[in-house]
Amino acid sequence: MTSHKPSKQRKLLFNMPLHKRGSILTAPLIGSLSERTKLKRIPVRRNDEVTIIKGDYKGVKGNITRVDRKGGKIFVEGITREKADGTVTPIPVSPYNVVVSKLDTSDKRRPVKGGE
Image (cartoon, rainbow, N blue to C red; front, side, top):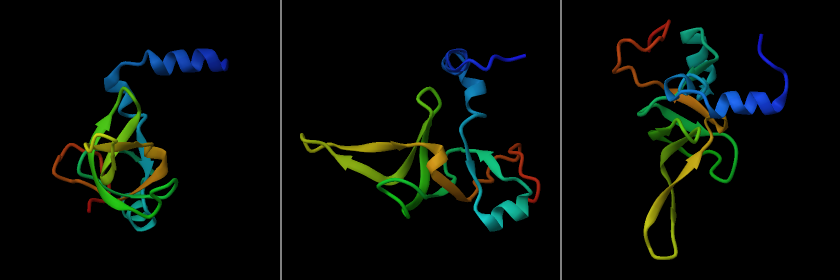
């Protein structure tokens, strides 16, 4: 039985191995894709096409370029910021603030029931 104490919940999350933390980084599927695959949420992967639904970049579409399992964030192409010294750096986005609009089906082991 797991604890209901918030401190213990945070401890479990922060000390969780990275291979298990990837299954927590899930994002909801867009309506038509959800009906076709019979899934509501799916773990995000690189090259999935997402649309941001919350925050400053709401409405921006792009592919996932990187998934940071340790930090719990994803990086979407086109979401960048120019720093004071002129370098361009990507901005991390929470996977809960995006909707997956197209899945990357190049990996045949990815669990997608209805296909694409």
